[in-house]
Image 1 (cartoon, rainbow, N blue to C red):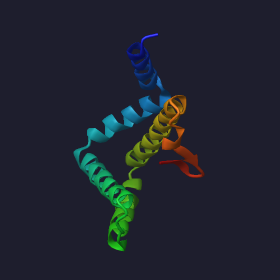
Image 2 (image 1 turned 180 degrees about the horizontal axis):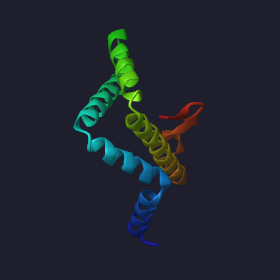
Image 3 (image 1 turned 45 degrees about the horizontal axis):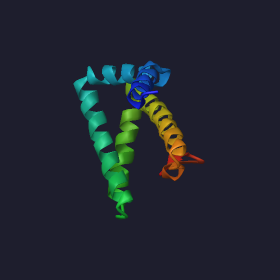
Image 4 (image 1 turned 90 degrees about the vertical axis):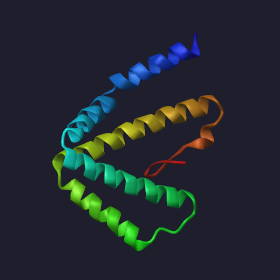
Length: 121
């Protein structure tokens, strides 16, 4: 068994999964709408900034939380954006499951663990 061949098989299986197909479909639709695409990119950048601050142990102020909540509320009013965020979450959960399986097989299962609200690091 060649590890690289198996990695390519895994990549193919992921691309053929319903989670990926739905995520990719809505991602392409979002990208066809420049205004929505920019709004989603801005939201994701703010989310990443928040997560980075939290991981670094920095305090996240109420202003930043309010901005993210406001952007989220605006985005969720758009049916395509809401569907895309749901598809993105489903795809992310599947990928986290794959990482967990690989980590467990290598004896590194502590890298990711499943919590009550999804995966945690």
